[in-house]
Image 1: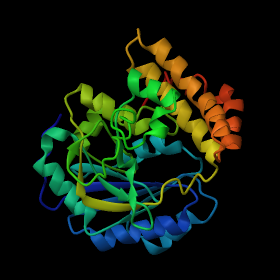
Image 2: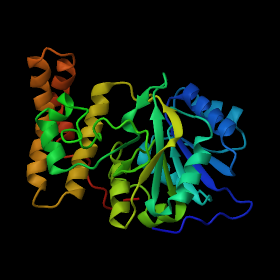
Image 3: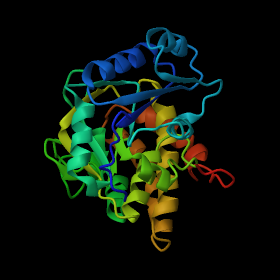
Length: 320
């Protein structure tokens, strides 16, 4: 990956990209926190994905000097970030969700971390829920034949604290130590602009969910070793722009199946796809047998399997 110690006097060190959709109040709170908590030179690019709640107008009124791209169509997460990144001039690109709050100079600390660990190539911090308890979705491990098997059998749900049975969630790790990880969440992901351009940004096959996993896996193939630090903390309310759980899970399943298609060896792919597709079905029967909440949700997800069964259709004409 590229040398990241390339700061130019007077130029933005980091280009911060925020993609919003119908999260007006949270987006404003996020942007305020960026200005309140960031001291290094930065530029802020906001892409509004055709919100209907007045988000673009509110951002323009309160932050007239930032770069606002008020779109007339919803591009999705991947394309919107790619559009903004083309305009970025900072040495680093930071992807930041609109449902986040920057705490205690987190962006400054994350850039310092990147300079101290240039070999990582991609860097992330620690995420908290609104009540300041741990939100463990800041990073996760890549899918493997074993992790998908464990998930299909319900072991990762039964033994969430186990690194053996829940390897994608890193078991009971509290994200309180610096560590190399496979995937850094796209809600707070730092990468050098040179490496973003080298990778071609997000693959547009991933309309929503799976984009950052694909990016990190492609970066790892080129020698990156993503790392996270507990020193850079943000609040991530998680999923504020998509509140319907079934719709969200359908998109998540589509993203994960696409990752399996693109990143698993061909000899493993049929078995992994079979096991992963079995997972929602096993959750239906598992919640029913244990009399746990969620049976109806998982039943609907399974009923809609025609939507997620084959993942996202591959984008051929324009992948980036």
